[in-house]
Picture 1: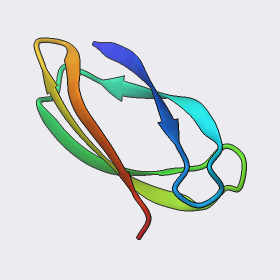
Picture 2 (picture 1 turned 180 degrees about the vertical axis):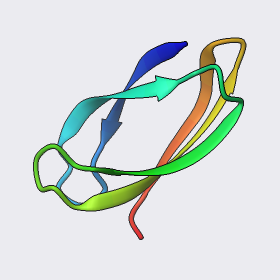
Picture 3 (picture 1 turned 90 degrees about the horizontal axis):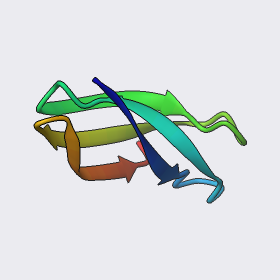
Length: 59
């Protein structure tokens, strides 16, 4: 089940939507900023198809 979350790049501050697989209860992955292209870590906790928490961190 895919859902979308609004996130903000920890480097340049650009906000954009990120697709998240809400069928997984816990996940951690790397994605690139749509604006500055720098990679950063995203940690997501989900339950019953909903995002409970989402954390963005630079490496």
